[in-house]
Length: 140
Image (cartoon, rainbow, N blue to C red; front, side):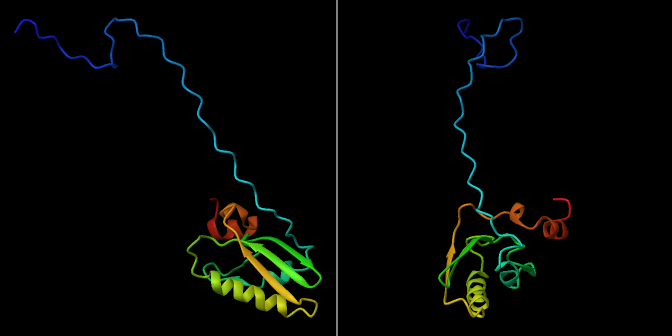
């Protein structure tokens, strides 16, 4: 029984022993920041007020103010809308795209509407109109 030795942990108090120098940490691969949505959508865009009449049913806020519209482009009467939803499983998605199509087709110069729903970059509250975000979330 005299040959038993206490089992000491690999780390912990040294009780007077000099610790070994720390091994330098390996560099951590950083994820690149996701690209910001192309946000050319401001009040000077002819479709700004029109599309902002489409209301997100979950918040009661226009989809432009919600930050769901990333880009709108018109070429020879064909309006292309690049947008996102608040989440992939957003139940309002089909209704929003139907409403977008309907409101754009009310314009006499619009011949066709193409809507592309994208997930990159993912929507987040920072994409909202700051005044609306403040109204909905307060200081968050």
